[in-house]
Length: 134
Image (tube, rainbow, N blue to C red; front, side, top):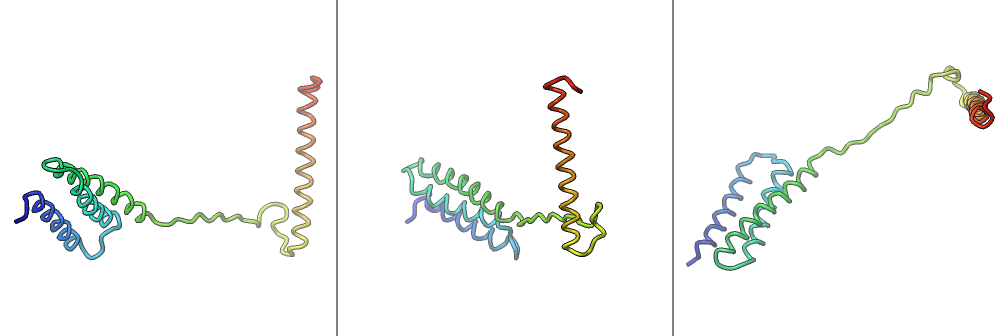
């Protein structure tokens, strides 16, 4: 004859199985993970303790297993995202050039000019702070 606690555990596991069967054709990973975690946590919790303490540890195992399994399943349910950055290269002074070699030379010239402007601005800022020539 089975003890009351073992009967309770069997009822719980039977209830979990019924929930899985009745939850629909396509349960989410979060739902499946929660149920599997509850079952595993209940089984592990029932192995710890004795007497009334075993019932408490079974309940704690069910709760912790449900939370852990649900969290893992929720992470699995999140869609895989990919970020695509599109850079429109047909802008600016070189945007209308279709020949790649010529366009590359144009962009290199623009880059050199911007670098020279940057150096000039830095030199002016330095002279302003160093010598007071603003």
